[in-house]
Amino acid sequence: MIELKEVSKLYRGQPAPAVDNLSMTVPNGETCVLVGPSGCGKSTTLRMINRLIEPNSGTIMIDNKDIRESDPDKLRMDIGYVIQQIGLLPHRTIEENIAIVPRLHGWPKDRIKKRVEELLDLIGLDPEVTRSKFPSQLSGGQMQRVGVARAMAVDPPIMLMDEPFGAVDPIARNHLQD
Image 1 (tube, helix red, strand yellow):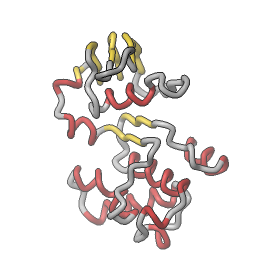
Image 2 (cartoon, rainbow, N blue to C red):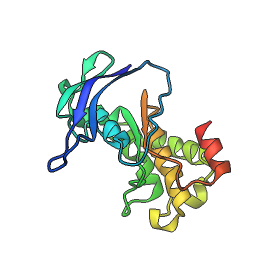
Image 3 (cartoon, rainbow, N blue to C red):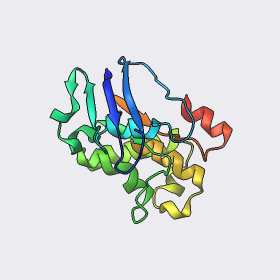
Image 4 (cartoon, rainbow, N blue to C red):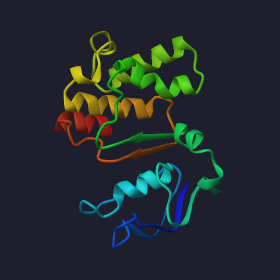
């Protein structure tokens, strides 16, 4: 369960908070969608949940534990996160990008290789053709799909997705959402 209690974020030099006194609960197994115009705090809220930024006030709990009590890197390893800008590492192959979190979790190489192939198949990219390419060799939609695969790599209990399908065609989008 994710719970936000009176969470606010005011960026320095801004007259109004990006997020103002937000309280909400997302039970385990539920899907929650934040809807609103550009600049209303959706991305800021997601970045606070995984501690990429800290709120100015309020409390964020995951499974009844204040996230401030967790090591930020450990917390992020257990949260899948797909960002608008895709965020693939340009100097790493597609296989290496997807394998980042499984490697951090200490998975053996054969398990990682199998998971990468499974995810590439799942997102509709041929592993034989795609695994050794670099992000710059893919289309925007393909890169977004790889970003989704990377977030799913260790089957995390929480997935945060910030407009993950903006560059994906409608057919692929429906498949990825399923």
